[in-house]
Image (cartoon, rainbow over all chains, first blue to last red; front, side, top):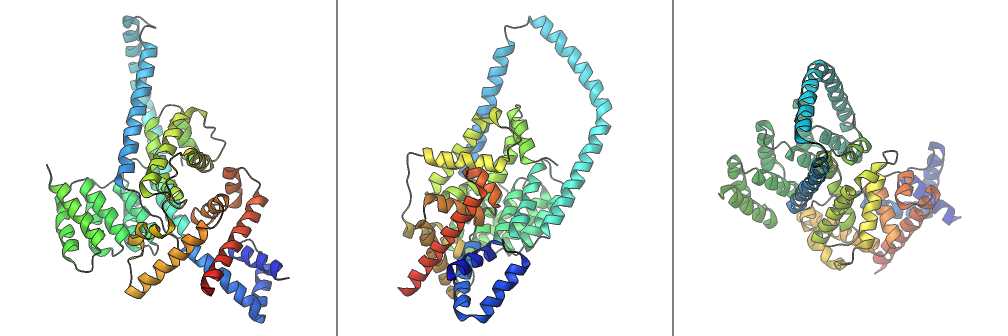
Amino acid sequence: MMLEIENRIIDFYEGNLSETAAADLLRQVAESKEVALVFEDYGKVYHDLDQQAFIAPSQKLRANFDQLLLEEQQKAKGQSASRRVGMWPIKRVLAYAASVLLLVSLGLAIGFNLSKNTLNAELLALRAEMQELLKDESTSMRIKAVGLTYYQEKPDEQIVAALIETMNEDDSQNVRLAAVNALGRFAHEEDVKTALIEALQSQKNSFLQIKLINILSEIKTKQAIPSFDRLIENEETLQVVKSEAEKGKARILSI
Amino acid sequence: MMTDEMIMKMVGEGNLNKMTILFEKYQLNLFNFFLKRGHHHSVSEDLTQNVFERVLKYRSTYNPVQPFRAWIFRIARNVEADNHRNIKIPINSLTEVNEVKFQTGNVLEKIEQQEQYSKLRKAIASLSKEEQELLHFSKFEQMKYGEIAEIMKISESAVKVKIHRAIKKLKKYYQKLEVL
């Protein structure tokens, strides 16, 4: 009997019970002290599972990936070049290239308006989906909203504004960290840079502080140094954050 | 709206720059997948890098019909299985890794959070590798059973049964700790 109740309790926390079954279980929890204790025990486990946070890798991971991608691109270029050489005489290649260039120019002129419209529609759809997901109660949905911004190679004003607001105000540390990561791609933009520096003043979470320090020191912005100094001088700042701020400052000031 | 599947298809067709989008989206999740499996910070970074190496290596074999997330996590599981170093840090030294995470709030909150997290980590470490993965995908990645089934190549009903079993084990472990 208790085994069956345990299974239903787990299904409840897993979100697998219908409304009726959930109501029935909660009634049993209210009526039986034994069931209530088991319900509470499982509640503790699920509570702790839900509290797990993301831990950030170092900048080394990104640097290694960039190197990997560069090597792969060079390999691919080398292979395609060696396929072309020796196949066609050079004059024929040049004539072909010239005709292709002419066609492409014409095509671009015709296609520009069409692609511009498609681009706008895509951007509008992205903004709308992002705004919708950012309102969701579930942190994973809000993280997904932030993840959508990676489809934008260039910064869009509205999307950047939404990311900044998320970084500053979301309840979840994980969502705020995801927003900081996403903004890091556009850190060279003045408004993003300013927002990241301001966030360094206001964010008290040490994870976020370290991430912000890393981004600002990578772009070597001297505007961030006063904020770094304030962190270093503040007694409440964790030692690990102070060390990162000192390293970051040295990096910015290095030639 | 471009999906991960469409982006990976473009990578497979030679547009390698698009791989950056997928890297930015999945690096944190993959890194934490390896970290929570007990690997050291730097080993987890290496394993994450290996996943992206394989994604690039096998890019032309990717079929956009299959969900990308399931595909990349299958690769992650294979990378881990192939990992010869197998350098896992002892459970009690995980406190250093998580020190930064829990230094918020007042001192009593910090201590309580640290203890709770340490308890959870020890409890999860007592599970089988499969059970750890199931809980990671379900609770950390918030995947549905169907997606987990796709990654682990088991049925959806098997996912449910195994998650139930894992949760019961965690609860028993918690009770054991409370008695001590």
